[in-house]
Image (cartoon, rainbow, N blue to C red; front, side, top):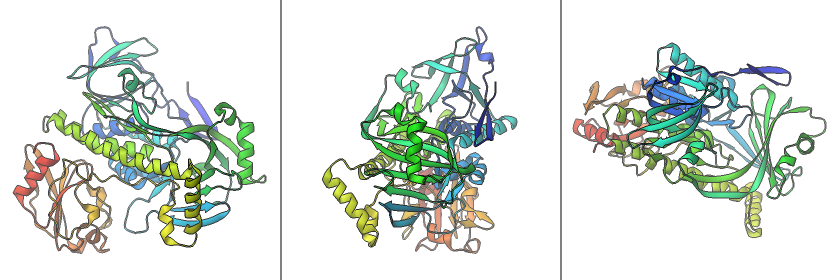
Length: 545
């Protein structure tokens, strides 16, 4: 039965989107087997499924739910994940619906101490951030999956399918699944666990997180209101309406606003979520004359933890199932999309027999590096926002006071270091960096920055395959090694009217050749084409060197 959800008297979506339907896999003696099974139809699981289906890898997504998540949950989506979503075919609806923002402001007590711009340079297709409720994000991903189905791509969503046991068998995975029509079993060559922070799959396999749980709690309230606050991220330290604590305000579509209020450690969570306790806190912040309605309320505790390994044989963990960070900094869903962006092209090469199994070990190497970077930044944010000693609080307050007048103090202020793309420095997949004078931002391991190109943008021409990007350099149409081909994209100075591409990819060099991975990360770069060097770099980037 469809569930209608209303916000402020306005219907915003109907569910379920992928209702339970009996599958032929449930027939007696079916002996069901699939190349890839994904557990979890949240943003990360759906993103992985779309990526694999676009590469013609058959994939089945299992979820005990059959509808998108209620509540805003993740709301901030950064530039790099938006670029990944462009490659997955659903970036436009995200940005069209989302609230675009680049500017943040920091307040101490009642004073604005400074502001910042997260995308100070021009020449990018996507903004620094959008705000968008997670239920819209999931809806667009489900719609994209159905679009791929209509195109004949091998993707299937199964709602009402709860995985109750998982066994890793060395050459595959065995699953037991419960449904409204009873249990059934299936096997898979690979399973990707995207079943969230409380991952039942992780528990079934006897695995756990390592890391920190911080002694503090925060109230999330999504409220519907007409307000004239600008489209910016506002963060308060020690505001008059929440003394000794912090607060955050973000605008979302449909007149919905996200408010985070720090509560402290020794609280009764059930009591604090009751409307009669939430509403007075919000009135103290917004004023008695502001009319609002509660849409969704939750309480969370800061956690900065990860699994010791993300790959366990033929079971691979991604997103919150693999790592957790505190929400200040928007590093949860954003890093999860970067997980699957890193994983799926590698899994395809291994499944196609074009790369050795050890290529998948680099998923652990690169994304654990990404998780550790996120955990470090998130932990530092948490320690600054919630100082645990008097000397820490004195330092924090001094940094905030000084930041109002002095530029040197502003980098010390940490209201949540916002998500930036991970650079895979020291990755075993990185090849030569032979471009003398080349910009550091496009070194091997770095994601490709966007730039204007003709009447479009560079990143729209990159991704899903190995490519050779040549700027004022001669290269052949493709270079092939071991069945893996890198196709050519040639650019001349005449194509770069803005000069942004030259600044981001040439620097002081007069010409350049880049080998780019399917996930738009740089594998190697040179001043000119050298066939032997390119083939070596392809072998390195696919784990065959």
